[in-house]
Amino acid sequence: MRKIFEGYKLIETKDIEGKRIRPRNEVYRRAFLLARRRVHLKGIREPFEVIRRGNRYILSSNPITFNAVKSLNYRVVPCIIRNPRYELILNKTLRNLDMD
Image (cartoon, rainbow, N blue to C red; front, side, top):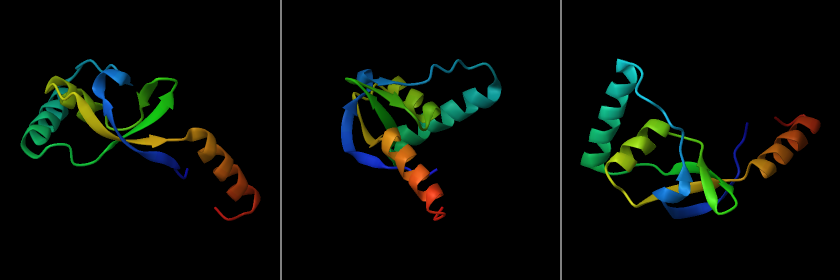
């Protein structure tokens, strides 16, 4: 599926609804600790993908890194805002034209 983005924006972490992942196993804990260390040492290297829902945003990429960023008390994070409605229209049009 092709992605269409509305724009790039710095968004406060309190306005983003991330997936609530509980550390159920050692694999998640290890990935979380590695992401936390990586963000602490190098900062946020790539923006998060979010979908706008009213005044809030829903996280659509990197939930473990986002949880690590929140645990490090970042107040704002770089985000790319996706537009799923236009993505659906584009994919239907390309399928109808046999261009996909």
